[in-house]
Every structure is written in C-alpha cells, then in structure tokens.
Image 1 (cartoon, rainbow, N blue to C red):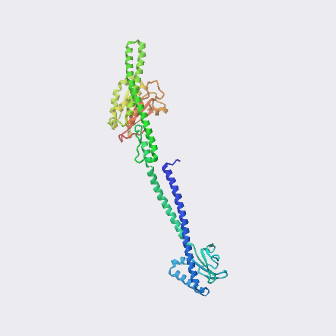
Image 2: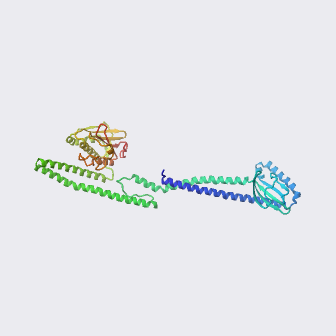
Image 3: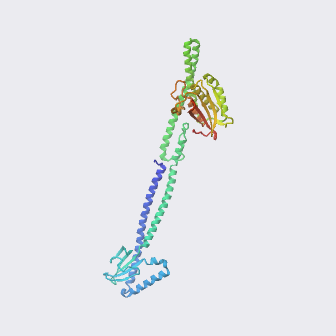
Amino acid sequence: MRLSIRNTLLLLLFLVLLLAIGMNSIFGHLVARSEVNEVFDAELAVSAKLIKGLLNQTNITAELPAIAAALNETIASTQTDQPELTAYERTRLIQIWRRDGSELLFRSPGAPEYALAPMRKGFYHHEGKGGEWMVYVTDLPATNSWLMVGEYPQGRTEIIDELGQVFGVSGVIALILCTLMALTAIEYGLGPLRELGGMLRRRSLRNLQAVQLERMPKELEPVVGGLNQMFVRLSQGLERERRFVADAAHELRTPLAVLKLQTQHLQQMAGQTLSDELQQLEHSADRATRVVEQLLLLARLDENETAPDCSLQDLAELCRLTLAAMQWRADEAGCVLSFDAPAHLPAVCVNSTMLEIALVNLLENAFRYGPGQPVAVAVSLRGERLQLTVRDHGPGVAEAELGRLTERFYRAGVTSHGGAGLGLSIVGRVMEVQGGYVQVRNHTDGGLDVALCWPVDAPGRPAQPD
C-alpha cells in the first residue's frame, strides 16, 4: 500500500515526536528520581546529625531509658491526636549500638532488634525479608557507639511514582498537541501542491495557460516552471497542427473545385467510356471535397476555446427541419427516413447550427453504410437526459471497435464505402463543446445505433455517459 506524501510526513513526524517525548520523559523521570533521593538522603543525614548532637551532650547510658519512654509517648500521642500522620511518623527508625556491636543500647519503636546496616559511616540501602529502608550511620565518639537512623522509602517512592505519572501524562498530552500542530503545518505546507493538483485535474486541452499559484514554495518552482514550459510547447504544437489543417484544407478547396469543373467539361466532350471514367474521377473529387470540408469544420471546432452560444431549443422541431432538408439525400441513397418523438419534451440548451452539423453527419453515415435501407431518427427522454438517436440498418461494427469510432480518420476496417473517418469525430467534438456526449452501440436487431445525449436538469453542466 502506497502512502501519500501527507500521510508519510505525518507518520514520520509522529514517530520522531514519540521518540523525542519518550526520551524526554524517561530522562526527566531519572533526573527527578535522582533529585528526590538526594533531598531525602540530605534530610536523613540532617536528622542523624541533630540526634547525634543531642546525644553527645548527655550521659547516654543513664538517659536512654528516659529517651525511649519519651519517644514512645510522643508516637502514641501523635497516633491519637493526628492519626493521618501515623504513617509518616513511623518512617524514622533509630538504633544505637556499642562500637563493637556486642549490644543494642537503644531502638525506636518499629525498629528491628538486628542492626539496620553495617557498623561504619555512610548511607546504606537495606532490602530483605524484614523490609526495605534507607540508613545513615554515624559514630558517637563520646559514648563509643554507633548511631543508625533509617527510614522506610515509601515516601520517596510515592513521590517518584507520582512524578513519573506526571511525566507520562504530560508526554501524552504533548504528543497529541504536537501531532495536531504538525498536521496543521503539513496541511499548510502541502496547500500549494494540493492547489496545483486541483488546477491540473481541471485543465483541458483547450486551457494551456501558464500555472500561477497564490503561494509558490521554492521547492515547487522547478515543477511549475517545467509544467508551464510543457504547456507552451504543447500549445505551440497544437496551434501548428490547427494551422496546418486549416491551411491545407483552404489550399485544397480551390484546386478540387477546378478539378471538378474540368471533369464536368471533359464529360461533355468525350465519348461514353471516357465519360464513365471522368464521372468516377468526379466522384473522387467530391469525396476529397467532403474530406476538406470536414477538416475545415474540425479546425474551426478546435479553435473554439469557449463553449458556443446555446439557447433553449425544441430538439424535436430542429430534427424535423434538418430531416426535411436532407430528404433529397435520402432519396438519392434509396433510404426511407422516419422520425419519432413524444409530445411535450423539455427544451434543451443547444446550438442549433452545431446540432444540424452533427445530425447531418450521422445521416450521411447512415446513407453511406446502409444504402437502400430505412434510417430511423428518434428523440426521447431517458431519466435526466434528452437523447437523439439515429439508427441505420447496415452491417454494424465489431464490439471491440465501437470505442474508437469517434477517433479521427478511423473507419473500423471498412474502406469500401468512401468515408474518410471524420464524421463521428465531428459529432463527438460538437457534443463535447456543448456539454453532451455520444453513445455508439450495435442495435439488437442489426445496424448501428448512435445516440446524442444532453442533460436536462442543469443546462450547461456536462453530461456523464452511462
């Protein structure tokens, strides 16, 4: 699965932010843990030094019973008067041992009967079956003994855990906020690229103007510059093609007309055999003239950058007028024209001249490929579209070739009927500039069925084929 640039950038930024915020949270937690331990260790050392100062001023052997009794009474009164402080009061553990470790001279309530730590100066962390505590050991030179002051680490552990939770929650919030800000920044940064994509999607072959973006990032300058250069080259190439077609058609019209006149003049002067040959030559000149006229018409249609003037028209009435004008051609081809249209059809926005051009080309195709056969023309309403259908009774077209019939100079492999392969191209172009489309299919009972379709719900909006 390929990710878009937007999703790729967002994913990469999210991973970078996650890594950065995760590392920051872990580092902050470690620093907070170190600082909390330092603060509690300093407080433990201060407490030990205060107790040491007091004990060095007394006769420890004589006063210890009184000190123990006073501590027990203080703790008992605290538990009674302020029970919420009981847990905190019992975090301090005090022991006094003889220097050789032979006798425990004093222990505070809650302290075990064994030594809290080794009998040498410093901080110690004890963890065993009896519990876990931090101990600071110092000596009492006046009494030749060791003072051990310990505390349960629940207090510092709770603070460290709470700080860890704060770092975790703040990291998640920061990740969410940073992701939203990154998404906004990416959307803003990709705005010109999205604008460029929309402009290119809406472009047609008739709109090859230079691309101009409201905000042009430096990275897009070579892309937009290359596109504009390509549009210039494409526009110049199309213009050369149009000029060539128009110039060639104009240059050919006069010699073809002269050739036809000369052929007719020679027919009047020659014998029967030569007259037949000259008549065939005249037919060839007529065919070449039709090709030139069609090329001229395509050139004019291609030159129209804007849609032709359209107005609401009665499609059925326009068809009747065109069929009446083409009756002589139907008689010449031995075809019978029929027309069918229901009453009260909605008006459709069309250019009447272009409609006549399209219908004449369809009728000429029908006469050429189905001589002597009936040609049926019908107008009908199909849902939200109005449809003009021309059906001949000729041989039809292979299904694989139906989609190519509107290509220029494509004749579906049939060359014996004299067409140039431009009729349906003209019809397709006429419908394109009017916002309609062409459907070509073989009729179930034989022959080719060509339908011209226009939307009737929103005039001017391009119709979409089924």
